[in-house]
Length: 130
Image: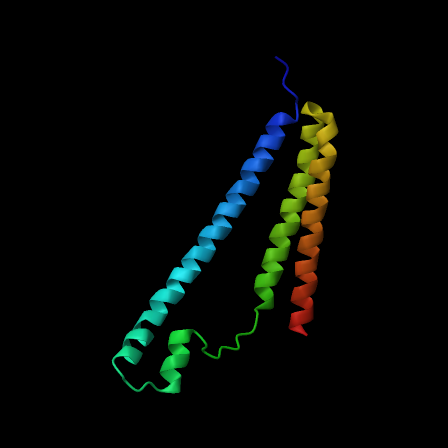
């Protein structure tokens, strides 16, 4: 029985995307349950005929007015880490070329994409700072 060299990589890719899907759905379910728990006191108060102030309703519905500014230093740190990770993955492509020569282009491409995302974060940090 022959095994295709890309079968392992395909299995890892499928497992990765299944993991991402599960985490995303779990996050949505958790947000839904949090919202339901937050609305429960409002429902009980309305059933008992209590008068609620608009501030309390806004707080229970999660509509508090927060105008927090994004810290450019956090974007800068994220950009630096992402760029460094991209360079690391690009360098990893050298070692991948020794084992699986056709696949080193994929790793190099992923590294370049990560560097581009990091540069975008750095540009965003500079534009917010202004």
